[in-house]
Image (cartoon, rainbow, N blue to C red):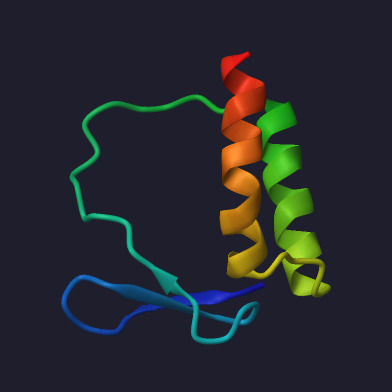
Length: 75
């Protein structure tokens, strides 16, 4: 699996997959419990497995794909 540790200024860094990746989530207190479906949890697990096995897309390519995804969503 992977570890999460504080790297300063509220930014968390993950080790394991994507060595040096930053988690820029804001530290907001949790006030409500959120239920997640088993399908969503399975999709998250598949995504983590893909990342662990190197099946990722470079950010430059993702930035090029975003407008295409948005246009499909809007139409």
